[in-house]
Length: 105
Image (tube, rainbow, N blue to C red; front, side, top):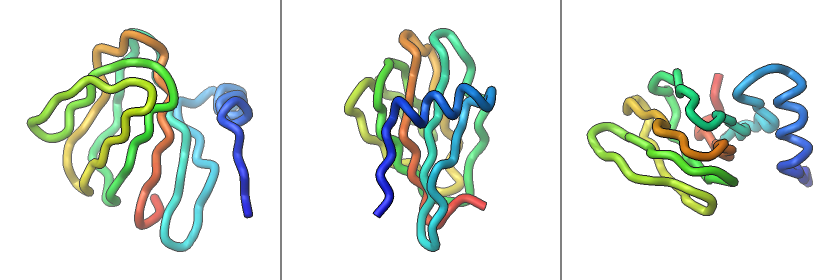
């Protein structure tokens, strides 16, 4: 079993000066913590894997393909592989648990 604490992951991510920290990489999935600050820009491009986002904290809009919705703590969103998507209009520092399947390469 592996157990992770969000506070520890966020501290590790910040210490590495990155917006994303991959903390799990297994045969059928990987997981990471993605952080975007209030007013920040989300530069990500479509991925080759399906994704699930779980918003741990913060508020923003999420656009997936042609659909846009607001997300905040407790929101869960599915993004199919290859579909353009991004967080925007980030009104509170955003922390998002990201699960990729199959694992990101």
